Amino acid sequence: MGLTLTDAKRQILKQLREEPQHGYALASKLGKQGPTIYEHLQQLEGAGYVEGEEDGRRKVYSLTERGDLTLKAEEAGED
Image 1: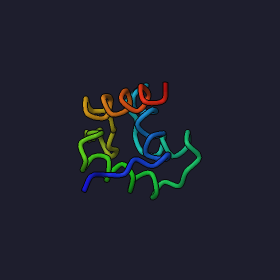
Image 2: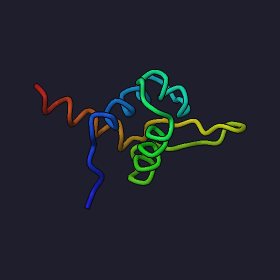
Image 3: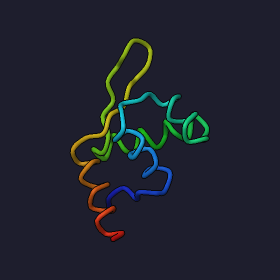
Image 4: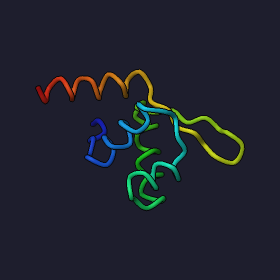
């Protein structure tokens, strides 16, 4: 069974489409609690929608090709 893309997860993907970011920045921009954002990021990374790269003490997340294609498909379905 695949990952269900909730509104919060879609918002994360859209933010990462603009630029790679760490979880704290995403939490601040989206007005969510840090633990919630990190849980979503972990799920998205496990499903292959985002990838994280260690940058010092922080992990910076970026959108993968799968994540980008998923957003494009959803946006095409909205038309």
